[in-house]
Image (cartoon, rainbow, N blue to C red; front, side, top):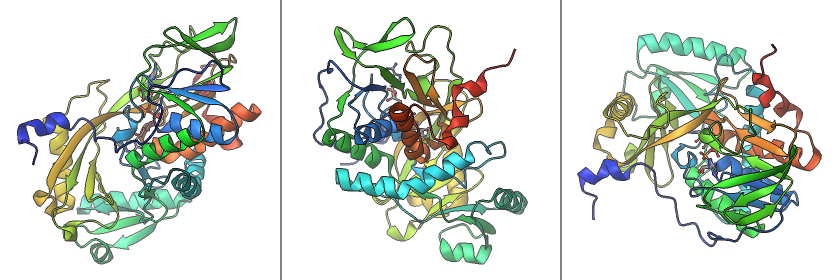
Amino acid sequence: MSVPSEVYLKIGARLPAPALGAKPRCAQLPTHADVVVVGAGVIGLSIAWRAALAGLTVVVVDRGEAGAGTTFSATGMLAATAEHESGGAALMPFALESQALWPAFCAELEIESGVNLDFRRSGILLVALSRDELDRLRARHTFLTNSGLDCAWISGADLRALEPGLRPSACAGIYCPNDHQVDPRALVTALLSALTLRGVTLIENCGEVGIERMNNTIEGVRLSDAFCRAPRVVMATGAWTAMSDLLPAGASVPVRPVKGQALALRARDQRQALARIVWTEQIHLAPKRDGRLIVGATMEETGFDASVTAGGVYALLEGARRALPCIEEMEIEAIWTGFRPTSDDDAPILGDVDGSGLVIATGHHRNGILLAPATADAIVELLAHGEMPPKARGLTLKRFKRED
Ligand SMILES: Cc1cc2nc3c(=O)[nH]c(=O)nc-3n(C[C@H](O)[C@H](O)[C@H](O)COP(=O)(O)OP(=O)(O)OC[C@H]3O[C@@H](n4cnc5c(N)ncnc54)[C@H](O)[C@@H]3O)c2cc1C
């Protein structure tokens, strides 16, 4: 039965998560743990999994459902090259490292969970659709090449041979061969299954979380009348971090929500499908194994306003049609919004907060899926050995402290 059109936009706020399998949804809070992770998005779940693999006892708590913060909103691109911007020099080594970690991270997680992440090594094509865009694309190619990133200039004829469905005005492209993609919903499912296997306790819909401190040392975490003694707490609370009561008095974390609207189309005819991700100046189009074509995403500074707007949907559809005319015949399956956790310099904020045992992992902006493996490794290194690896050391909260 098809969904009546008037219900369409209302149901589209978030794609439904796939069946989650056996997991301790209403688990009891254990009395002890080595570390409590607050936040069950891709960052918190990845940290929890890698920490459990390193032999730590881990509890994850979330006031909502795992993945339902921002992670389910993501397209799942691992786009270290396509996302590279001027001013991103500090982030680039970390992003490239995480991209290089992805194949092993994915293989290990797929084996452990039995879940296919739809990891597609098909690269990203950046496309120019007009003469003006062509000039800017040439400048972008020079910038990416000068930054030492692997990418190739593609002529219009070659572009259309690679993706015959593109509008004939597509006049050139840049191919980024190392920028792949996964399915974020499958990723969450896989991480939950791996956590179960590794004995990690996950408590969703946990209510208010409180951290108990003695002097400047964390004693543990409280959920209503239950207490878990733990010397370390990791805040992986995404776009909600700056407003969190878990931060010590006086601490401020420069992270804000940057809203993104996106939608999923479904091709009725598989000949309409793209073979790889296509980016234009307006939108990205990402084909998924299950036949969806994700169209993303707006960038809006409107706080935590989750509304789907006419302007947002128009911009996505107009941008998609301009690149791929056959979208006109595709079915709109879902529309949703999400809140990128964005720091003042667009790079993540990782590491110790105040020497009390509180660790932070937030600010992943447009790249939380890409950066999950390197973030998890950096935080687990800190938890297990007291220091983050060199590529993460420039990403601490300290970089925002003003020298007065
Ligand atoms: C439209 C869109 C497209 C995107 N596409 C991509 C992409 O292609 N590739 C990519 O790499 N990234 C992409 N991103 C970015 C990516 O989604 C985010 O960077 C990533 O999901 C952040 O993960 P997280 O775990 O930090 O946050 P979240 O997934 O938001 O998880 C944080 C969790 O913390 C919980 N929480 C918050 N406060 C508390 C509290 N006080 N107590 C208990 N729990 C709490 C929340 O309930 C939530 O579940 C996209 C984002 C958007 C919006």
